[in-house]
Image 1: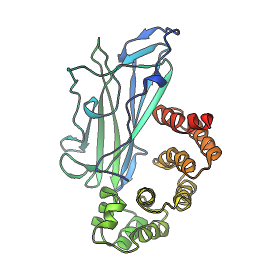
Image 2: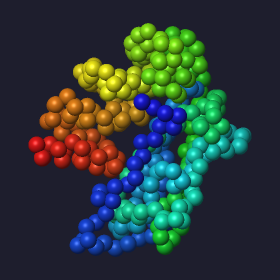
Image 3: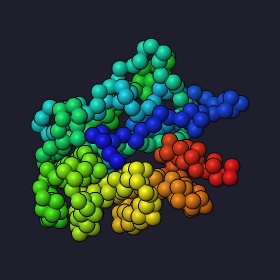
Image 4: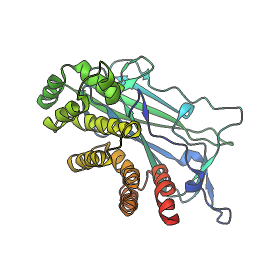
Length: 311
């Protein structure tokens, strides 16, 4: 399932970032932290979502106390088309003065990353990248603490190009660019519920499979998986079908910028199916492949590994 702004950020887990009380470490100012942005490549197709990844690195050997978190008014994103005015994608950088924010500790010589999908901008209510051309994505992140105000800055440039032959063929099969935008903006469940389209998810899956080289197909496949997952909660579950779709995605697009989402969800699905050892193995594979996605690793440890040990 997706929303107008798909955010996978969670508050940094203190248990995974902080030293224990009996292991003191030297402290460094939060202004040593480095923020980098990764847009999953420099070139993207018109109407294609962009998976933006934020990476924060502590390059020192010391610990850093920080308010750091990627949500609410802690981060501000702007997107500027070449020759145009910067447009806000998120608000931000208004510190909560009533009670403040919890501080966390980022260990020395460590890095972590989080991602979100840029597609529909809720502020001007339109596509984030509405036309072809060059864009600059900028981020400002409040990484200060109770003693020091620090804002980290980073930017990345992308070029949005016209749809390829494969992309145009997919759009034609869907019916129009508006149909594609509706699938990717509103999510497949809402798209298919609108007007009671019969066999809609099967049709979307067919379109994605028919055009595997289109830039849109990985996102449509993930939308179908999300819709099937939602249906499993409302109707008679069909976990094998959902598992097959996840595996199809990972077999076909193992290096795609959103592949990590499938890898992060797979352990929970295997756990629901009673495949506990396979779920544990999937957690370890995710941890090895994505060591800097610390919040997801912590969640998987808490929800999968802890229960496996207790059982």
